[in-house]
Length: 195
Image 1: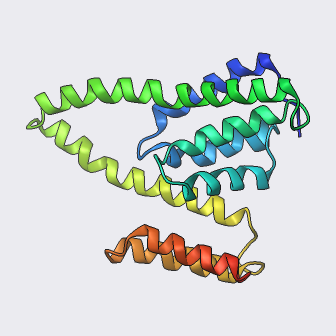
Image 2: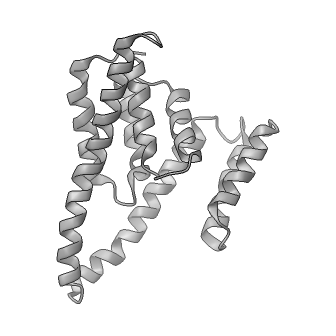
C-alpha cells in the first residue's frame, strides 16, 4: 500500500467530483470506479479495507453515501501509523474532501436539472430520458454487487456467498421483503461462519 500525503487531497477531490457527476442511482453505483482508483491505481486501500469500509457504512444507520466518508477516513489512515496526529488530521481532511467531492456537484446538478425537468415534464425527450435511466441504474448496481462479491472469491471458492448474493438480488427484485431483513440474514450467516 502507498502512503497518503496532504498533496494527494487534490487528486482525491478530483476523483470524487468526477464520480459525483456519474453517480446516477446514488454513490453506491460508482463503487467499481472508486475501487479502481483507491485500490488498483493509487494503492491507498487494500481489497479487504475497501470491502470492509463499504460493509461497515452500509450496516450502520444513516444515509447510504456514508461509505464515502469511511473510505476517505481509511485513505487518510494510510498516511501514518494509527494514532499518529498527522494520520488523524489527514483522515479528517480526506473524509471531508471525499464527502464534499461526492455530494456537492451531484446535488447542485440535481437541483437545477429537477427544476428544469419539472417545468418540462410533458416533453417527449424528458420522458424518454427518465425511462432510459432505469436500466443504467440497475446495471451500475449489479456491477457494484459483482465487485463486492467477487472480492471474496469466485464461485468455486465461496459458493454460499454467491448463492446468497443471487438469492438476495432476486428477493429484492421479485418481492416486497424489506432489505433490512436480508441484511439481518446475511449478518446471521456471517456470525455463524457460513459465509
